[in-house]
Image (cartoon, rainbow, N blue to C red; front, side, top):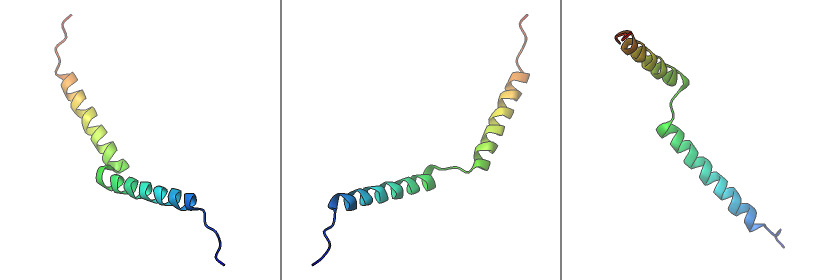
Amino acid sequence: MAEPVNLNRFRKQKARADKKARADENAVRFGRTKAEKNREQNEADKAASHIDSHKRDDT
């Protein structure tokens, strides 16, 4: 006779696998590498600095 199986365990395992697959898909679609994030932050800082250096002082 076969071993009894817990269907809740299989249901939860399938849900975890689906969630992980969706997370991996989103990481590929929306994820950015650390280098890309740093480059964009540096560009934003440079642009802000450039704008700030051209402001007039009203004293």
